[in-house]
Amino acid sequence: IYKMSRKTTPTTSTTSTPVPSPSGGQRTITAILQQEKEKEMEKKTVELQTLFQMLQNITETMKNIQGKTDKIENMEKNIGNIGKNIENIEKKVENVEKKTENIEKKIENM
Image (cartoon, rainbow, N blue to C red; front, side, top):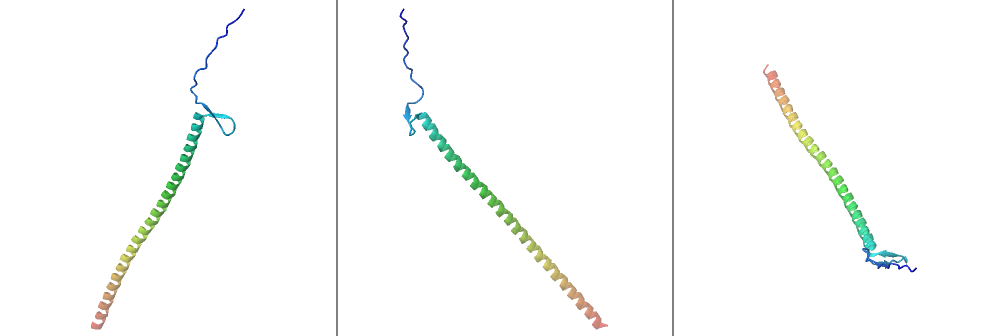
């Protein structure tokens, strides 16, 4: 008895047409595009990491500058206080001189 075999026709594939790769194998266009996309993403990731590092460096530099600015402001306040102290000392010296003059006048009048 003769059996009839059923012939099937190949269905169209959802994958892209294979293209030869340099190594002699074949890769689909989708795989090639995916690899290119991954390379581009890696490149962007490296760029973002570099930018992030630069931002961290700038932030650290700004903190250092702020610290130095704060120190300068404190020094200015201290200098202002020293100036006031000098004025107070000068007034005290003047008062002592006046008292000394008054004492000398009293001694002369005795």
